[in-house]
Image (cartoon, rainbow over all chains, first blue to last red; front, side, top):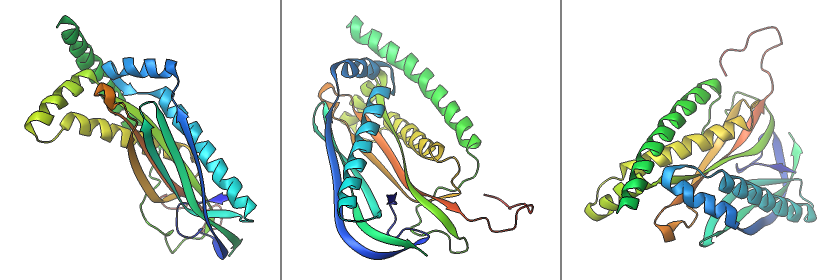
Length: 106
Length: 154
């Protein structure tokens, strides 16, 4: 599956547009990571645990989106966007959405 | 009271040290990445043939230190620019873009860069944890000239 956040896929021609696809996941930070983050808020800096957690969740969201697209018979998703929303303290929703299309090389 | 002073001192020294170290590392890694252009263009440059295009991401979650939080508390009362937070977000943005570039070391060009910041809800403690996400489409161009001839610039 080819992914791009541009309106068309460079080097390819879009032959069919199959509609919106999306994937999302809501993840909670676990206690240990949250504790470390609390300490990090004193000295500042990167919260590596959270960075990894969000990367994993984004991966998951993209996978779900890709699954949906392949069920539609697409071979590419264009104009992919990401969104993050914090639901409550300690949980975040990661959303990936895009337009499933069928492309062929130019 | 002593607790607050200790936290402030810790935040001030560790935060400063970490910040200057981070800026130095950013500069070093940015120059190591070379001149691959990262752009917000919607289309690839018209004079090149694109071989492949892939979505790439880079992200980082940053926390403010206690001292900056304290300063910001004053600012929120009197108004004005929160300079201590802008430097934090600048670091996050540069780090995210760097990770994006490092995740596609053989790309020739990046188009449609988007930057997105979101608060991870550390607000209950008064300490924002900000996630900065950079994503773009990485392009690889078909070589323009026959091999052997040097290609000018990147």
